[in-house]
Image (cartoon, rainbow, N blue to C red):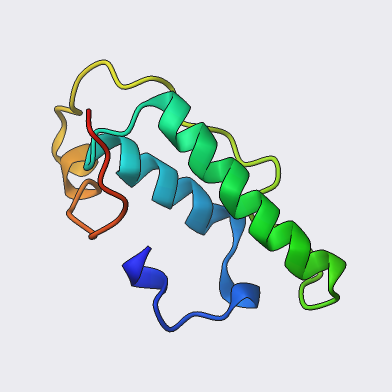
Length: 92
């Protein structure tokens, strides 16, 4: 999540979560199970901020986990969206 380094919690949106999960799967080789654990941890963190009145909504809530990775995308647009981002390192 280094790309979020200077962001405030309130700036993180569900689309940012989806992108994080997608990149973790394709770039870092995270499994669906690993991403599910990441989502649970992030959701708990955001839920606490909501409970404390710091946020209005939980950006991780109801964000779907990407489908299991079968093979790397082949079209150029898909490849362009799978650039290194320095996110969580997963053992494939």
